[in-house]
Figure 1 (cartoon, one colour):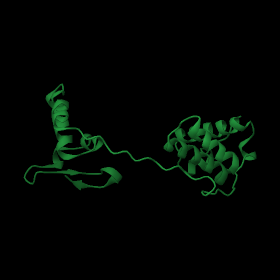
Figure 2 (cartoon, helix red, strand yellow; figure 1 turned 60 degrees about the vertical axis):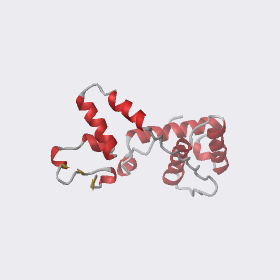
Figure 3 (cartoon, one colour; figure 1 turned 180 degrees about the vertical axis):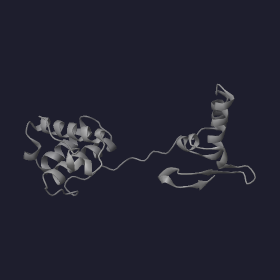
Figure 4 (spheres, helix red, strand yellow; figure 1 turned 30 degrees about the vertical axis):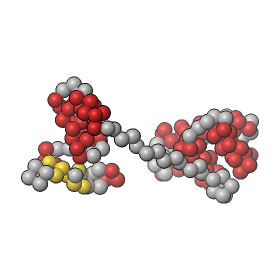
Length: 164
């Protein structure tokens, strides 16, 4: 079975990427194949069963299952114009993991492992400032205020400016 995805004229208006479109279509194909019926003939009971299978049999992560449900929700709400009940098909809760904190010795070994003085400088700057890698790669000399000992980050996460 092949389905037309959200990147037709309406999908382009919604600004979905080609990757999202392909992912949504693959999800619908998988869902229809699972029950051997077109997805417009499947309902909430089938969606819940599919969701349980994704978790229990396929052992997919909460984020992946959420993405699959988003594809099905798009199809039912936007394409078929049917109601979608979050209560009947709840989205899974994501597990929040704490980041791994390196010891001082591990940080020193990491910095010492740099091949060139340039790479060593990058690692030291990352460690000392807490910059994100993308923020570091966009720094310019004019962003460094050596008198105030401040680095100006322009257009960082969520396109916000900040000083570190």
